[in-house]
View 1: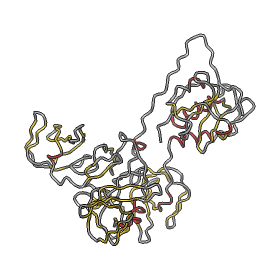
View 2: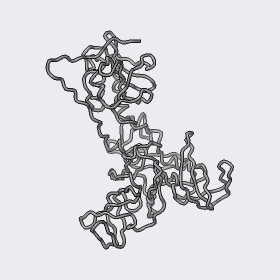
View 3: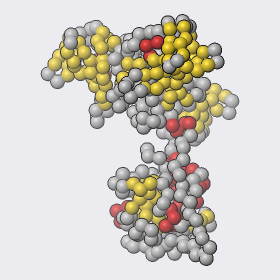
Length: 431
């Protein structure tokens, strides 16, 4: 299949300036896609119960994008550590004589620690405030034990005495029970061991590395006990409900997409929008219910009611699909009629408020070029040589794209294998 040239070309005697679009900053909610932080607490529940109670997913952000969200909706930097040693605006006890540069403070009280930075020599310094002034100190200045640690996806050890209940270990002492077999090694144990690493296999099964009697072993998650309820366990042993959320699509006081018909007791809500989830409770039958607020009222729903959070990529695709069947119109960039580049410009502006150039050749400079083998929803597909392209379409996933084809045609969906593009550009951030 070969389409006729559909580009809308602007001809003028004056200079026409195309301004390239710069990458936009994601809003707070979208930057809160966190690396799954895995911790543990002693109890009699199985780890499968813990999985259910947390309802979190493994989604990895870039190292620069990790954030932790408090129950008050505040973003804290998480590129250094999770909890412990006064990180994340937690009051923390400082002791003794604290010296940084030319400043010495003789203190033994709680101060507000507001930031942390790891130096190239792996030494961590913490920023704190006292008497209206801001100071820095290294981690040795803080009261408290230096273990346990959390291991990030990059293999770095982070202090984690503020633990997020239920799942995983990472250098926490942990009770193993019964007969543990991995490969050709069997250990008959019922005591605490040091778990130092965790790995999720391609089949979604998680294995944990632990040390016993000077040797290192692996075991699957079923060997570990876990927390019964979705609590955050602080370094002081206090249980908090999970309004302090770590990871996973903004659960517990983060906006969350509900879909379909939600029934709880005698109340039925027909909704498809974001609501505020404020609490979670696991029932005795291991089913988890979430409390949410809508229009000033409080309701409960089970976890199955939650759909995946809509992304900007979905917004682009969903809006484009609304215009299936709209006739092709040369120079058209409204729902009354579109040409190929007009459809792209209209959809991006109205779906995600991003303005791309009006013509196909101008749209070539938007975003960044990506491989045709690694496309994501919303990517722009181009046909023709760079600088002289004559067609553009929007990739919608599953090897399909949507476009306004040519005079006499209508907006339609086409399989990419039947009309292969020459290259692609990405306007939205990588998923």
